[in-house]
Amino acid sequence: MAQKLKETILNPILKGNPITVLVLGICSALAVTVQLKGALVMALSVIAVTGLSSLVCSLLRNTIPNRVRIIVQLVVVAMMVILVDQILKAGEGTYAIDKQLSVYIGLIITNCIVMGRIEAFALGNKPIPSLLDGIANGLGYGLILVVVAFFRELLGSGTLFGFRVLPEAYVPNNLVILPPFALILLGCIIWVHRAIDKDLQEN
Amino acid sequence: MNTNNNVYTVIYTSIVVVIVAAVLAFVASKLGPAQDANAKAETLRQMMSAAGIKPTEELYAAKNAEILQLYADNIEEAYTIGLDGEKNGELSISQDKIELVSKLKPQHKAILAEGDATLPVYIFKGGIAVIPIYGAGLWGPVWGYIAFCPDCYTIAGAFFDHESETPGLGAKIKDEAWFREKFIGKTVEWGETPAFRLEKNVEATGATNAVDAITGATMTSKGLNEALNIWFKAYEKHFGLGAFFNMLEGLSEAETVNDNEEE
Image 1 (tube, each protein chain N blue to C red):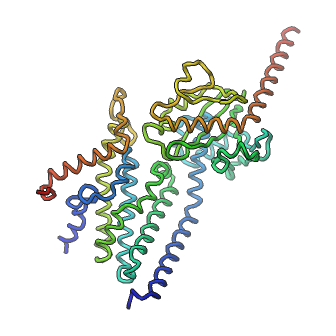
Image 2 (image 1 turned 90 degrees about the vertical axis):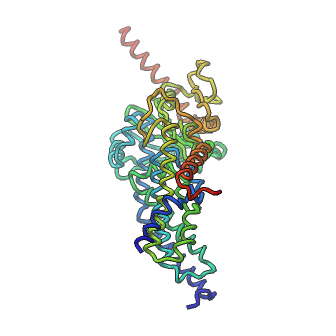
Image 3 (image 1 turned 135 degrees about the vertical axis):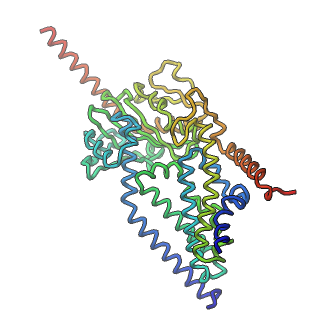
């Protein structure tokens, strides 16, 4: 049991990482990784949404009519996303970040990771493992987001969390700021990930 | 229980939707005031940044309550005007009931054709007048606040913001202090078309009503240029005339000084 739980938590972060292995949630990974702060808030929001949606759907799993289960899941996910957005907007410290992330918080609903985990895991498992699975998948997503944002903010603006790290003489690279570079960076991360984890390599 | 039964399905989905709607309505009504307060404080920060009340970083570091206090301490008068340039309303400036017409969204573009408008003017201490502008950037709306010196002609400061312009390119209108600082000391040629130019290589011409557009942000600059000119046109009668009277007043004052000297 403990072994299974450990796997539930570790697998999405490493071997079954939603972005680098399952290649889900790519769109927002390209869009919100210009600055670390935004990426971090986005990661936390996704963790909250995946965790809570999985929990609620798992609680309801025996009552949901099979024919409308996707719709019911969608309603639950949409509610969580709106809640996260509303809470971010209401916080004095998070208001500016919510404004900066603009539509991408709302677009968490379209993140395949959320619905994917509910379909694949929450509907067939007890609430607590489902909650952990949701959180772990959010973490796996957030980890990649933060890594990508680290390089993009460093090379694109010469700052980290808004603080200047590289000397003023460094000319920010405009390509790094644009979405195509995030895709290139993501490719490199997948490459590194596969080079380290031999199990992921195809023959 | 047969969960695939039609009646069950309909009842189940109805209940889920009603519960979710209730939760969201409850949360929205609970968080609404906090969100409005955040939005209002944000507007005040941007206006006061344009008016030069405090440096932008300090305004953004300050708590909402401090911002309201600062606004109440520095505002002198707030009113709305029509396209004819005449006052048509007052905006409350007392600290617990600050009234703003912050976003001009519904009036965008169509405003000049409609002829009916409530355009806000905020007068800060020292006679600095702040007006909002609103327009379309590349990916979404851009807006800003322009502060005028008491001569209603020279720009005392500006602040621009955007919803989703490209970071590092269009987003420079907000992120880079040097961009908004370029507007300080520039002038608006009321009554002329264009009244202001945010275009490529216009600073080199020596014109005082021109600021160079941002390289790599053509569409954002164009949108901002259009927004500036639309709203300058809308405010033209108010400030154009105001500037004229101020100038007359200035002249008569100069005359009295001369008279005194002659005596």
